[in-house]
Length: 434
Image 1 (cartoon, rainbow, N blue to C red):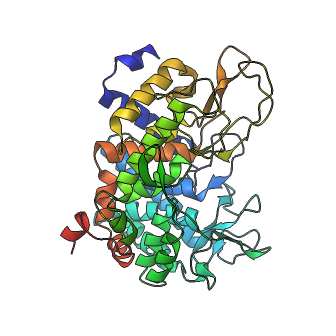
Image 2 (image 1 turned 60 degrees about the vertical axis):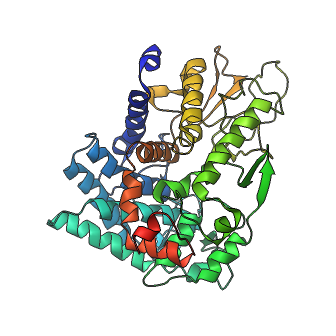
Image 3 (image 1 turned 90 degrees about the vertical axis):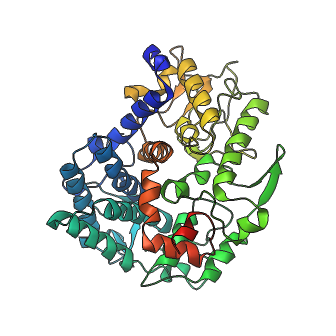
């Protein structure tokens, strides 16, 4: 661990990014391109994690971490699987209407855990397919097939069906009960979902659907910062992994004289200030140890600093400033704030690694840690294994900070550009695409 502190910022980021990227080629089922949700034994596939994998193979090729031919093979295996998957919508199918169940068996690709047909996770998967199609542009059979399948998968999605006749897109559907009884309300990671739904050349939603969603936003002033509220930090990251939101504005942000990139910078500052104030007096929280997000967490009894009782939440969407908060921090979410607040983020990550070196098992950031709870061996509680979503967002945001590769690829995607314009985005780089 001591070697890490002699590294320059660029060298440290390279090491952390390469370790995060390694999750995907190391855990992927090479027969079908599916990637497990976690590194834990018997983990099912998360379709969103496959989307991160597809998005990151190009970065791996550029940095020499994976051969182009291997990246094409892994990408094609996944895209062929989804193209040929069971779209009947049955309890053991893979999806329907172009959407896919959230969790799948890693060998058969069938639905597991009675999971929902997930609109947002399908959007993350398809975004990855579009990144792959933009990068692998060679005029040769395999890369041509890759582009054709990615386009067909996107065109197959019936986004209008996902509205269920309502004003906004539903969050999910199950064969046992139909659509879930809630849609998207409040700011979240769903910008990507709506932009892809509006950019569809086959089944687009209308602009009024996006406006209906932004009408549920909650604009607040916290710690003297005006910003668009979302408690968990990941909500301020996920759409940014694919969309370059610097300087472009929809009607809501135009009225607020801000943009979503600036909003995410303020979110990082608010997270830092919350940890500095430490309202629950948790051990470890300070201005250089922050980051509450959706993450794994302790779910059983662990002694705290005073050996007193402690309420813990397991896997939960922890948030600032209204909670939930049980003292658990998500270092991957902190690091993923890098493009928005580089100095604050690097100070925090270096501090976390210095104080809690056990949060970097196998050189890769663990999902979470709780510095106020003991592991029984003289250290703090650390999540077991690794989560694909954590590794994916870390690797993508470091890449966007270092080179802007994924942003650049998606700025050239006509579907994404059309979706942004139909949602009312203007200014910035969109003007140069007019």
